[in-house]
Image (cartoon, rainbow, N blue to C red):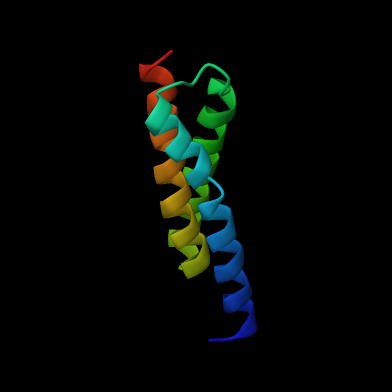
Length: 84
């Protein structure tokens, strides 16, 4: 594994896990009043497009990071819509 892939995997890991605290807090409290619907909607769409792009170019760090982040952001987005 070369340095570029290692760097990408580290960046992907940090980006992906950054959504975990908000997802846990949202799931536990079911409170989403202060979460921006527009931000999470646009972020989820953008991350989904990055995931597709990563799949097209077969870039493992992009694919892994965006599978995790899309899943977490989508969870938060669903809670935001469900628990207005």
